[in-house]
Image (tube, rainbow, N blue to C red; front, side, top):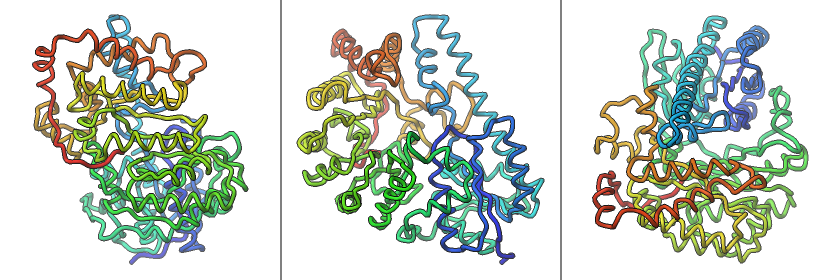
Length: 531
């Protein structure tokens, strides 16, 4: 055991502007367990790139922290996000009939890839800066990117760095208590440069996470007002961790564990109440893998909603939903407590549900939509994340999805149903990755963090023969659609589906379709969950 820690500096590595919920929960937990420790949160996302090194150096000199803990959210190059149009670029490069647009998109793609490569170099540079300026400080790195690519990150970190995979509370508590070997799932790069992996022995007890002390967080987080207050973006609130399902493209069950664990509903509701009544927050995003999923989690959700209703919390809220076990009463409470939108992965084909191992019945899901309608939904949006052209997709399954979306247009009104066009992102160590490697779609031993643009394109899964049809439909929709604003034109997802519906009527004869689509890799049909 080394000397006990007196101060911690949390550094949120640059990312698009989004509430740093993970860091806030860890800092709040450490304060409640060890109130004498001085903490500070530095968010590089809200600092100009040219000033980030100087600001970090200044805070290191001022605070002289014993521990510097970095939060790294995003690492892969293919993931579209608010700072780039990666999906548009890939679609134009692969499928645009205009040679100039293809050439332009190739240049844009190289720019995106170069930016991500440089971002990694810069992020590791921040760690090296801390090691140079504070050679005795313990370095810690965590966050979403690290949870997926922990081994890669650990190999490139300075010596004496702890790389936390998944939950950070137990690991950080053991670090501030001075233990050389921290708790929790982590990699450790020792002074000699050797990397050691320590898997988690048990999951963190979420009952220990009481409502966040936002007054304290405000006092240690200079950028607090950038995120919290009227007119700001949604604030993330955590209600549970763990996912018992095994969607073949998802890592939540590995990162958070397969067993669901729950926060006290009273503490969750109290957290939302303080955000609303004290800080004027109007929008809440429940950040769980799925806000509701299993039968037991539905009871937990209902208890949270009951508390919110009793406290008369005036917020609009949403989160990823799974509708298997929805009841009329729960639907009513969701609407009454401020449900803003229904967000979920959606395919209108039971064959695709089974192929992706989502683990629910389509008819059951459609019945749940009717429960929401009966519960009095009016202006709430239905946000459908459509994994088009996933392994097993065919013209028939596409037609089925379009038909089901049409049903939802009829049920809720066309303007309230927002189909989001996206494709399965292939993550390392998932069943879909293993299938695609076995089929030859991905080379054996490929680097999931490669900067090779031809591998990157494959990780955004949209292969032939359906890929071109879907890609060109998307590009045609882009010509007259606004991406996010329905007031300036038809919504791009709806337009894409309409174009696909027309295209599907002129596909080759069925015998030729069978020959074309037989080349698609097949994924096992074990029924699991959506994410």
